[in-house]
Image (cartoon, rainbow, N blue to C red; front, top):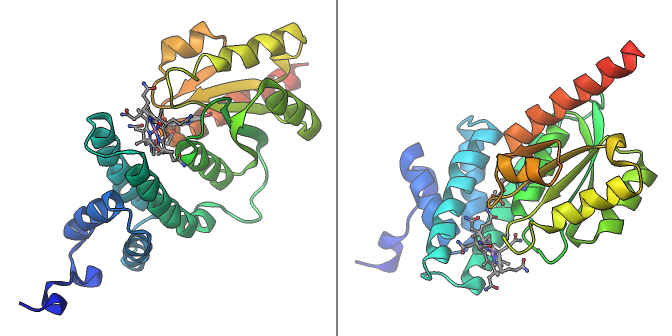
Length: 234
Ligand code: B1M
């Protein structure tokens, strides 16, 4: 059989097979194929959020499992992350409504010592899509980056992301510094990242732990509504 006959034509696959193929392509770090897959699903009228969660996050979950089990290593995972970002870049403008009324402002960043940014980017995208203004601090943020930016931007929400058990305690450093400066109650503090849980969120004094990007949006909306109600009540 010739190489050409072996080649998989993504557009000829049905939805299920295409998503399975995208899992393989993400695993292999094939950015162009991921971008093509995303575009095909969009043409087939898949909602951007569905593509994000089912095809991209689904694929990254498999990568994460094999990374944990020592089957994949950092260079391969970096390629997978790069492919995922290619797909996310196509979806981003579609998830972000233009001209929607701003419902609040969030400063978000990955904490000091941590360079994982896919989840944080996803949360930022979803928040923007829900009408929030988002100031993205990027990765590896020390206390001052969060606090100075929250102050200068007049943010409502400070969002922190951590993917490592070694970096998640840094979230408490940020919150404790806010308490020391007497500004803790000026902001809604939301935290997230794979190793966290609700108990941890409570223990470090965050307002809420958010399991995923959709929960982050819902939680942010709830807290903003509460804040407005409190302000209205005087
Ligand atoms: Co890293 N890594 N990694 N890694 N990596 C994990 C986190 C790990 C669990 C893999 C494993 O062993 N199974 C493990 C951590 C173990 C632990 O701490 N217990 C690990 C490790 C060990 C490491 C290194 C130390 C490896 C090494 O160098 N030996 C190193 C650390 C570098 C550092 O940060 N200092 C490292 C490096 C890397 C890469 C650079 C190769 C790459 C990151 C690329 C990038 O982000 N640009 C990488 C990746 C990709 C992963 C995995 C495979 C995938 C993470 C991801 O993007 N998930 C990850 C395995 C895993 O998580 N299962 C792993 C997809 C993303 C959509 O999900 O980030 O969970 P997630 O975000 C979700 C929610 O958590 C939530 O919403 C998001 C969307 O639904 N959320 C928030 C996240 N942040 C939020 C903030 C909020 C709200 C919700 O604020 C309000």
